[in-house]
Image 1 (tube, rainbow, N blue to C red):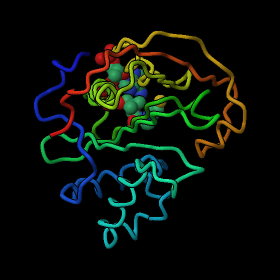
Image 2 (image 1 turned 90 degrees about the horizontal axis):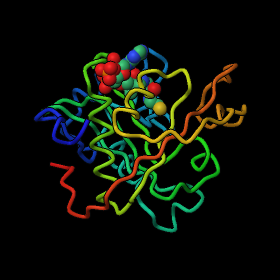
Image 3 (image 1 turned 90 degrees about the vertical axis):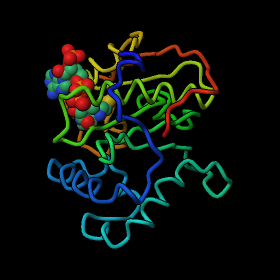
Amino acid sequence: MTDQEVPAGVRLVTPAAGFRPSFLDGAREFAAEGRLESTYCIGLGYSLESLPARFGAFVHDLVSLADASPMRLGRYVDRVLWLVDGDEYVGQTSIRPDLGTQYLLAYGGHIGYSIRPSRRRQGYGTAALALTVAAAAGMGLDRVLVTCDSDNIGSRRIIERNHGQYEGEIPMPPQAFAAEGRPPRQGVTKRRYWIEIAGDPDADWEA
Ligand SMILES: CC(C)(COP(=O)(O)OP(=O)(O)OC[C@H]1O[C@@H](n2cnc3c(N)ncnc32)[C@H](O)[C@@H]1OP(=O)(O)O)[C@@H](O)C(=O)NCCC(=O)NCCS
């Protein structure tokens, strides 16, 4: 998919309080499949119960993950963007420009994405990566590492449709699963792809 094929109204935005109703619906969907952390909510100290009352603070904390100030040393810069369709939250992507940990260098890569369960298999994941690559170009990156589990057929398809060049696959040690907050699974490897992008500082990726 190219940017031109991203449907009208589908775009990446900096997390904002205006998407509160659909975000909370989406968070409940992620929680129902045991993936609430896809929203970053748990790691930032929020729960499904506390989110509604503390939504503004959550959005602030989420956006602050992109803060490269010395206060954040020991963590890595993570620019989280929401994929929206019109005024509805559909999912999130993140850009880690510095590959600042051993985990990111080997397994995590520059870009991550997840689509809320009720909106899957409708092309949003493919659009999310296309738009995120454009955003990465706007941040000055000229190629990005994108990875997926060997058994994640949807993600693999998304990367390949976005012109990911397959580099190879590496075993997943227990520490790599732990870094992703999930139990080890036998026989799963991490597939590594590179997407070459032309650095375009004027990339128009956000409304
Ligand atoms: C993986 C994920 C992002 C896919 O999002 P999506 O919006 O369903 O993706 P798309 O609709 O763009 O589908 C892309 C392709 O994958 C296929 N696909 C999607 N999910 C699939 C599945 N579970 N099994 C088989 N094929 C699948 C689609 O049919 C489509 O195929 P096509 O290119 O031939 O048309 C989504 O399932 C998700 O958020 N999963 C949990 C988090 C995750 O795995 N993130 C990726 C980490 S690397």
